[in-house]
Figure 1 (cartoon, rainbow, N blue to C red):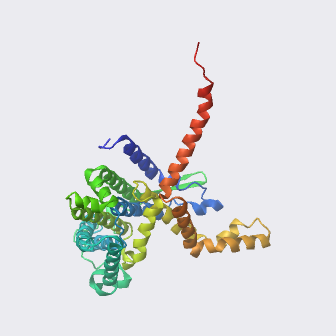
Figure 2 (cartoon, helix red, strand yellow):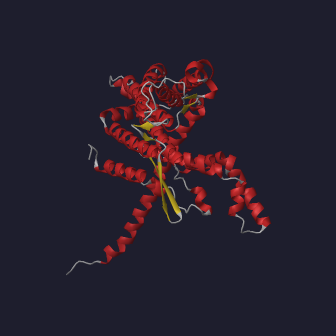
Figure 3 (cartoon, helix red, strand yellow):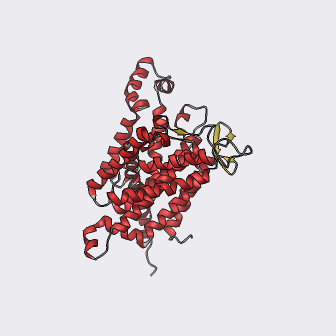
Length: 397
């Protein structure tokens, strides 16, 4: 199917099913229950899941395949956002020109930055990319304010030209008139499910980018990137120059990041310099490592994992905790809240840090390795259960 092997086709189908059914999967608890706090099926968060999934998939092409760790990929995310918002200001709210310009602009910047940074490898490459990202942040925040609007952020105003905008079209981001924020809510008993246009558009784009990543992984180009990661010195001895391949991987990865930035602006027409900070670059590194660097599905899992904690656990405050433990005596209730309080709300980073440490120590391959171990145990148990039945059978005399 689509030029993929059976295993990769199955993986793509599974990801597609999970993505399309996300409004149901992410809302397992009734809307009025105390556990509804853990529901993640609202449009804004679902959009972030797939957008940052695209970001992490692209980063994994550079880091997971080639072994080059970039600490500056957020620069391309910010460039993509600024490009999309400028298209909204100049042409109109149709998202296609903005997304197209986001990919092209981020690819050109990645070509320039990669050409310079890839003259070094290892930690020196990482420091160079971090320096370029911080320079980009400083330029966007305080130098290029006519283009970026500084700390306020770039947004669309009524005075902007919008040459191709008409009164028949919505005054918010849309795709040929279909608003990105358009949401249909399905009430099924005590449950509520949201089906958002912007989410499904981002999901379809993510599936396309995931398919392209599979083709890259399985292509001769992908094999060359794996060879560079394994032993670049030996590759040099064969007479092959690895720099064109690493530069191509860097540009492709930057274009993925620019696409993610363009989609972020398409869902919310605002671009700020904070998207280019080093913390945003570190976040995509965590996503890839948590999910499983060098695997296909790992970065998507890592992106969903971190964004879930960021948006769900950070909202659990003392009021929510009191509701949870209200059935207990006051002394025990206050004691449990005092224990849980440092790990939720503003302290959600502590919980994420502890889980990250546990995964790195016990599952160096990330969440994918954990899933593989669980699957192997089930297969081993099934084989063990089937063994006595097979041994009881004796050949007929």
